[in-house]
Length: 395
Image (cartoon, rainbow, N blue to C red; front, side, top):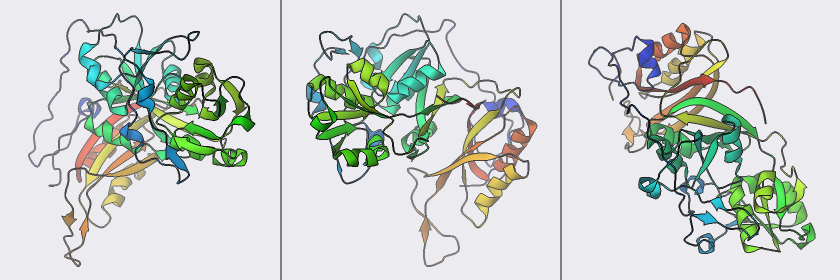
């Protein structure tokens, strides 16, 4: 890939969220969104729940955790799940295969999240957008598509956890889709041990939950002596225990999941580390206009040519302007073959990488604009994912 020689000079281009790197010097183009005069509204028809969501395929959480199977057999053809005859109906997660059949009345702001009712992502969506209509999606990709296809107004998806680290799947999806980060929300994760009414701790033999949740509660679960089985979501574990009326099986999930599915809370705050916080991104079709009246954060992704000190040079553009970096994440550039080293050192080969960086500055600030102009002089690719207010609260 050739080094970039053209430099974006306007704030409008910086906020557009996309840079085109080229050897040809040309004036930056202005992209005008094409939207209908009246915004189409849709009301999602909920589809079946998938057991094998690919965002958890690589999160096994230890050899003592096995995969719970047969979940699809619990569901019938109804668009709603019935836990018991006395409990309310719960919509099933939205699937991308059902998008073409969706309709809407447009009464409230609709916010997509991944999981089922009672998931921590639902709590994050409601914290980010109070009084919203939270719309469950069966996969992270389905949530991105729901926003792009105007089925929902926003999406709130996890990007990193203080114990489990980054959610790599969503980093990849940020690049694949054209949504913009318009905010962030941090949620304190407080795990509970749930079981059906009348079941005691000593009655339990196994526990279901997401692999990361099981790993975060390993000490507590080991002391109780429970075997662990992994499912795709903490709330899904609670739903499964309630749906099957299991007497020897508990679930690690939130207190809201216990309320939704009529389960009893046997123990609260069973996580091994009390500082368990997940950071979520708020995504929209269009970027917000950044300001300087409050703390802002900007997220970018870029790639570089291979060479000594190239990454150092890239990070130096921020240090030279006293811009603090809050996160840096590298991901292999997909669909790119291994490249041979230019120095001919034993025929060594290397990956091309994308670098995701968060820094504490608004794109309305001249220092942030100058830093990206400087970076673009030697970056082979650069895209602004969003410039948005910092979440200073904790729930």
